[in-house]
Amino acid sequence: MARYAMVIDTTKCVGCMDCVVACKTENNVPEGFNRDWITYETIGKFPTLHMEIRSERCNHCDNPPCVYTCPTGASHISDIGGIVLVDYQKCIGCKACIAACPYDARFVHPDGYVSKCTFCEHRIVQGLDPACVASCPTHCMYFGDLEDPNSEVKKLLNSRKYRVLNPETGTKPQIYYLI
Amino acid sequence: MNEVVITRHNNLIDPTLSIWGWEIPVYLFLGGLVGGMMLISGYFILTGRTKNTLCSCYRIPIIGIFAISLGMFLLFLDLEHKLYVWNLYLNFMWKSPMSWGAWILIIIYPILLLNITLRLPENVGIKLPKLNEISLKIQRNPFITKLIGALSMVFGGLLGAYTAILLSNFSARPAWNSPMLWTLFITSGLSSAAALVHLVGKDPEERHLLAKADNGFLIAEIIIIILMIIGFVSSSQVHIDAARLILSGPFAASFWVFVVFIGIIIPFIIQIFSVNNKIPHTNIAPIMVLFGGLILRFIVVYAGQYSQWPRNVFINF
Image 1 (tube, each protein chain N blue to C red):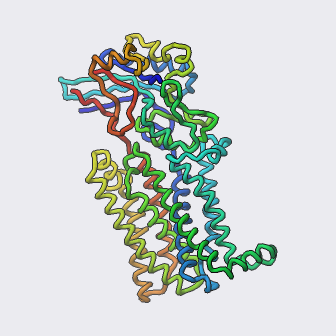
Image 2: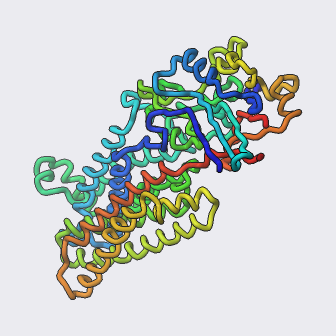
Image 3: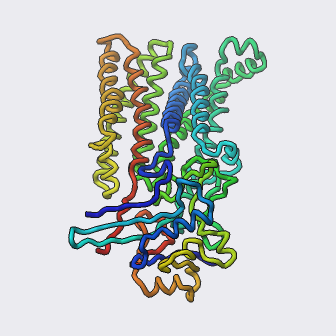
């Protein structure tokens, strides 16, 4: 069974926000909300400062607390590559999944249900990359199947140093940041 | 310097989580209160206090039904996708405390109704003679009476504990993520219930007993609060930061003034005097206990939402 994941090269990301705009356009994300966003992190003491820019979104965790806490089964792990999705017809808007997510990746859609990144499920079933990956001008984002040893994401993780966000929360996130 | 700037500004999420407003703390308070009341009522039934017609165990379930219904209404008010609420009862998600809670709330109703039938209010008995007959049969059967008491205690305990387990389950919110939280909520629920029954009780001996019991609950509550804080400050950095919220952070003043002093210490001192017959029993102490219990829920719910895992993860410099 496929396990979809995203690999983001932080050494290439320039924070142009094309991924954010592409996501909003592709998924009709309402005004004032974001399914993905840019984080700028600066560390050090002037003049020896270092900056990392990264594109963040739902981590489609292998051990997703949002799914476990959902009282209706609306939040679920999809058969399509193990991605985490929300069934809008089942969601009651209790917001427990939002509280459970350590990445604050979810939000309440103005229509009442909880919304978040879907890895552009409608595109990947057609063999396309998610909109953010397809639109990145620096090609710093990669999407693919970790179960496939020949996939680009698998090769990158085998050859480059990487990390995930807040691994101490035990969620086993599936967005990998190359460093 | 380690500075993090993010471009996201989602409503109710940024800059800090604020998904749950006043409805949830009030609901949690009412849930804990009814859980505590059911524990007290069950205890009174099991210890044979039903022979006393003034026993609070006859009034508790009536108040309990109204309180839990109000709580469930507030829970419904908080939902963002209200028309889909029925989905809650189409599934049982065993890993979800909220799913457990939804079913516990449903089971609570028949138990409270059974408790009411132990002695129907006079006007109800006259209007519904068949129900009155059932009530008389239950009264004559000590096994069923005890069973109602036991069920009341078990499900009262489950209701009181669930309201906190719901929160402590969220490991993403360090201020909630304490194994002590359910003991705090159940003790606070018992304390609030004892205070309310003390307020509405008609039997002076029973009121005296409840004031004594409440003092015990208040001592237990303060010990649990201290243990919780010790647990937090001796844990990881995120938990130390969570403890700071009530030790020196934005919730410190309201926590120590409203919860600890007004909700625990002052009523404890008043009730120490009243149970030792130095002063007559007064309504002010139980009102303060109820107020403290309510504010505790507000502070726990808001502080939990305020606390989060760090966003600064740049560790390779």
